[in-house]
Length: 303
Image (tube, rainbow, N blue to C red; front, side, top):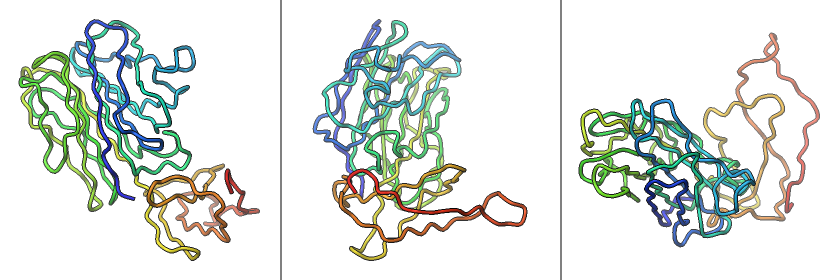
């Protein structure tokens, strides 16, 4: 299933202890939301700046109790702009408020997509496969290079102070949302993306923008989001690869879930006769053997 961009939302706050954003318009249950929060004038080594909602806040605030997960965060190399990136698989609600540990000048940029692999229906189920960050200084800040698989969504985000009030668009990408707090020279956040048409390295993902000064310190991140596996055939053999470089440790459970190829929704009532897993042994007994035992399929929810 290919990715589709749904929409975006933005919010700015000055000297505030929270930022009260909305979820992107037209988002539907099962879509993934990526939210970038950028903080102005924070110190090197500081962060994170958002208080996760573990049930101590109202349901409008992001955090684990509301199905939101902090995907990554990055402080600047010197006093400058730090970012936190949060994600959720949308189910319901209109808000994505964030509570700060201290008063901040901040902005929020969010984008929603359909087509991600989420077998559990939550952000903890699979996406993103990669979420890596970088500190940037001066002009042309770059999000980190990553190695993408074919069909994966590459999402590049950043937080910085720019001279023109726009990050610009990295080559080959589409800029989805770009918001500053109050014009050029104030904190700004951006989200850009593209789908990988071939497997391989991206190289640094450069935003073509002049920073407020040569010493301006900002932060960036790159996320890789795995699509719903495309598998043909009905009632026959379906051969679908596991995520690349997956390391299956002791006690690992592999769940086989039937998904609607159009919507990505879980399909109940599917019968699985045999499941065959092919793997390389990375370690184990000295004789090269592998531990075996009683293997069986366990019916899951809706089976």
